[in-house]
Amino acid sequence: MNDKLVDFYGRDFLVTPDVLIPRPETEMIVDAVLNLVGKPYLPGVKPGEAKLPQNLSILDVGTGSGCIAITLKLELPEAHVSASDFSEKALAVARKNAARLGAKVDFIRSDLMNDVSHDFDVVVANLPYVDEKWDWIDKEALAKEPEEALYADDGGLALIKRLISQVAGHSIKCLILESDPSQHDLVKEYAEREKFSLVETRGFIQVYSNNYAG
Image (cartoon, rainbow, N blue to C red):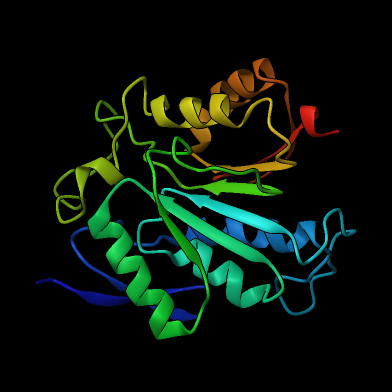
């Protein structure tokens, strides 16, 4: 079975061969959201000025194990958190994790945002962004994880670009994306074409504001 528990943001999440193993760099997505609502994300770290209320609505696209969505709900109990994934097997794992950890998250089967019917304040996503042509990746070490959760076409950016285009023009205020730092300039260039503005970069994470949202 190869099922195991993996730490993410100080909590144990069930991980199976049907989902990506959570990485420490992805925790910065949670940090970025907490910073947006003026909540400290580390002891002794001064929070940023609150730009959004803590009862905001959040969508986690491509949720996998559910680690991001569930963590955000537990860190921000007043928030309304939804999570989407195209894989029914991944959603089954995410639902188990939500039940185990006592997080009320709405799960939606959707190809990115195709079947998401309403807008959110914040959209977060750790989508597949690995380019199979990268010579520094260890494919053998990644072999136990689903390829569809790791690799993407167009230099690893195909799904990220699709999501940016889907979000553009909606009332979503903020988009938070994970990608490899080597891709950040290309992501920024594409996002700016869709009228997004880069707010900050932290590690693998980029935070964008939606200029259409006002």
